[in-house]
Each structure stands twice: as C-alpha cells, then as structure tokens.
Length: 266
Image 1 (tube, rainbow, N blue to C red):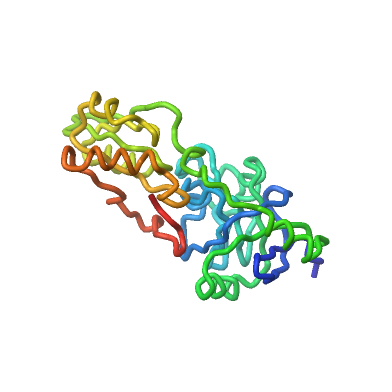
Image 2: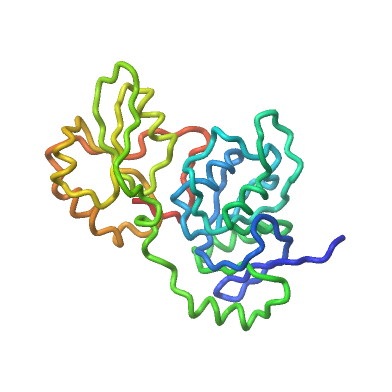
C-alpha cells in the first residue's frame, strides 16, 4: 500500500489522510457534502460550489470520466473535491478526459482514500467549517494557523456571474424570459428553451431599468454560491420587480440536480 501524500484538516482540528489527484496545490475552502449517486461532472462544474470543497458520499467517483456535453458552466469554480475511491480508468464511450485531468486543467485539487462516511457525519452533526487540503508533511499547527487567518471570500456571485448579457433562443418561442445570473447552470437555460422560452441572461447587478427595456414575460432568479445577504444588488432588484413581473427560480430538477446539504443558495 502506497504512503499517503495529501491530507485535509478542518478548523476544529479534525484530520483525514489520503491521496491527491487533480491539481497539486494547497487550498482553503468551506467544506460541504453532496449525496448524489451520479452527476459528479455536473457537481464539479456547478457555480453554486464556488469556494467550497465538496465531499461526495457515493463511494466511487471518476468511473465514467468527463464528457464535452455535460458541463454546467464553461469555467468551474469549485474549491476542491473529496472522494472515497477515485477511478482514473473511465469506461464510457463519450468520455474525452479523466476527472483528474479536468481538475488539473482548472487548478482544482482533489483527495481520495479517506473515510468519507465519517467526514460526512461530522459535517452533518457539526455544520460546515473551513477546511484546508495540503501536503502530508504540513503540520497540524501550521494548517490551523492558516485556517484561522483565512477569511472565506464574499464575492462568489460577482466571480461567477456573466459580465454582459447573452441570449439563448429557441424555435417557436412563446415567452421571453430574463434570467438574472447569480451562478446559473446551463441545464436550467436548456430546460427553459425546451419549454418554449427565449432566454436573455443578464449579470447579477443589472439595473432595474435595463431589465424593463428587455420587455420580459417573466424573471428567473438563478441559484448561486455564498450568502444571499452579501448580494445586495439582487435584493434591491427583487424589491423593484415584485408585483410587476412573474418571478420564479429553480423549477427544473433532473435526477442529477439535487440540493446539497449546507449549501446556501440565492
């Protein structure tokens, strides 16, 4: 059995040893877990996990690789990935790269080989905390000092939201929807298109007047990362839109689009 080369340490001192995959770097994030049995590519590319390190409770991850058609965003912003068993030899005719290759390309660290059941119970019972993924030789004292001095960023929505408006149209559209992008997933836009909606995606800080100029039939508020209270622009926008347009959010849920415990959504 090969020696462990990576470990994670939580801010309360819990420590788990494992093996690294993906990007070989140190990172500090908020730790959360996800109970989905499939859809790890969608999870890794979900903007809602910005600055978060995700523990997958399903034990085997990586076995069908990464495909070109299943991303939820073009640029993943997840903080890291923690799994029990990682498979680097995918069996899937659609796959174009391994999960480790995808994480490495996007500077996302991963760790496997640790007890994810114990870790998940800890998150469930004690709540989400800061976590560091680091080299096996890093001392606990040094890691805890880094965790104590690190403040989790509060700019998650501004990081993942689009910078200018863009369009996703469909044939024979019946409705025009404006989607406020707080970290929207591509599958939501595809779902709206399938239901006869032309979609205009706008940045989270788009002024009320510019949305009115688009003459929408309804407003879609996407989910996203971080604490909603940090996104004051969206709070003020919703106050102005209420009562003037139908407003809805996250009505579509595929089998691999399940909510994560401890994740805060817009």
